[in-house]
Amino acid sequence: MSRPARITRLVTGMPASDGAGVRLTRVIGTPQLEALDPFLMLDEFGTDRPQDYLAGFPDHPHRGFETVTYMLDGRMRHRDNHGNEGVLVPGSVQWMTAGRGLVHSEMPEQQEGRMRGFQLWVNLPARDKMSEPKYQEFAPERIPSATPAPGVTVKVIAGEVDGAVGPIAQPATSPDYLDIALEPGARWTYALPEGHAGFVYVYEGDAAISGTDVRTKQLGVLDGEAVAFEAKGAARVLLVAGRPLREPVARYGPFVMNTREELQQAFADYQAGRF
Image (cartoon, rainbow, N blue to C red; front, side, top):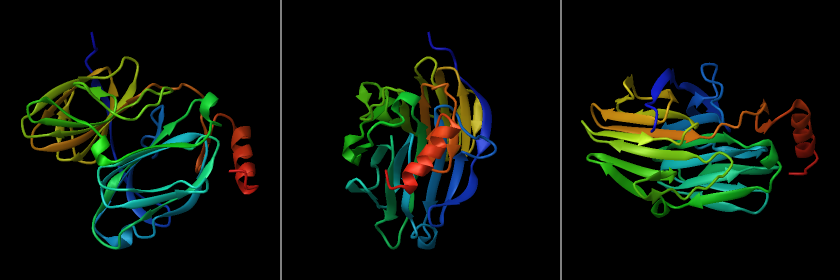
């Protein structure tokens, strides 16, 4: 039987800037919450002001982890130095495994309008850090939805809800990634896999989650499996969980390895053009 979940701490996102000056809210990867194994960073970007996003994220390297981009509004073109290229549109998801290394860019495909979404960083186990880079990229129509309770609609990016199975597969961390829309008064309980580390992030409205009121732009760290949702008004919530790796983390900028020596090698390989 699933153990009732509780929220052990609440964290509010902090204003930040990344890339060539893109304004965003950093929720994981701050002094308040540096990481939540296996998750290394969570950014929310959302603005109607073109000057906040037009500079985009020019060429930058990654090694040793995965980036997950979930677009709500706007269009973002990605390219890398291995010849991969595509456009993320509203409702699409890209799960990129950087592995042994690549250099890529993410640039807006629009001059005006709203740009909104999330980027999550997920660590890779030591055995996979030097794997071949790859992408799992899915258009909006490839992301299934479920209605597990009255007034509850769930987009299933990874995991399973009422027979709707998310398209993302990652055996190392076996992630759940759900975008949950709650109508006023709606109630629903979701059981995470046992032993997973997880969090909820409310990005619209407020909700009572496992007995704790979580407000807009607050993240709740979960302990336990059965996560209970109750909407006061309408709310949108991300629920993300994964199997912890419980490995040492050596991290600097765009590289996440297990030892300082591996980090130094990553810098040397990048500067020598070996990505």
